[in-house]
Image 1 (cartoon, helix red, strand yellow):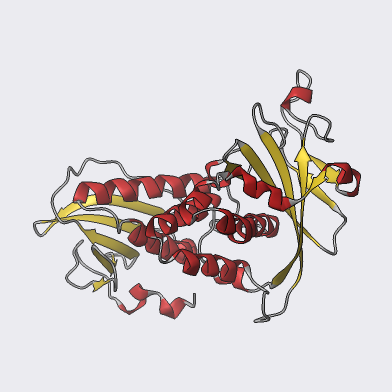
Image 2 (spheres, rainbow, N blue to C red):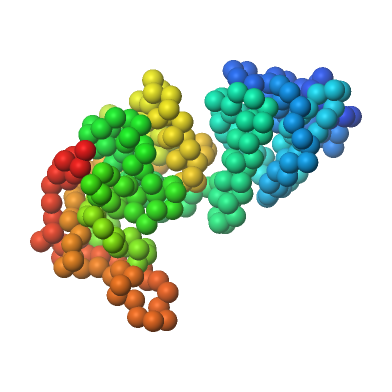
Length: 325
């Protein structure tokens, strides 16, 4: 987002923490305002509908702090950017917080939702070298999961159940947990790369009960605005539009995206792709894999590359997964 477009750019520094010189956020359910601190730092202020205890501790991280204050007889929840390096990130965090509170119906609920979101952002940013930005490999992995969600699960079951099956954002060993139980690990590879996938953990193809299916999506280079071609951002937006009429599924999807580490950034709308093909493999006891049961004492974990041509004996029709529903 260009710097001059940030909503606080037109504001002057405020001598006090208040909303008298602030700009109310358009379309927000609650009273959110864009503001600047007396040092001129960007703020998002929520005027709470009633008073709450001010001693609630809110997470602070990566140059972003949050606090509850009383000013002018009003109870305010103030989010403030303290390091301008993270200005773009702060803007997207603010939008996420505004959207996440739509279902909150009291001041206490608003504070609880925002505190929970801030904790998730704190955890998310704590494990990334570039705050808010997924690596190229992570973007490709997310695209594979989103395509499985949209092109498979949305056709097989209701939207809410489909999104509930997406468990990767909750750090589950596999990406999807279907009824049965059947777990699906989704891998995404480029058509121009070697015909193999990386198994990044001894847990990915391990399951105590039920079945595991390895689903592999091949992606080819796409062209801008061509039919069926997409960027990561346009794929996310397409799913959002699909879920727009199902608010509960839409909210779950946004939570899952956030848990995965995705926020709306212009960098995700640059590279275009087109889906080429799906393949699926039934991971049984004889499937070539390394799991936690194979690790000798002293080996904590392992990652390895799996040759797909050597797995042809275990290939199955991905449509067979529909029977899980």
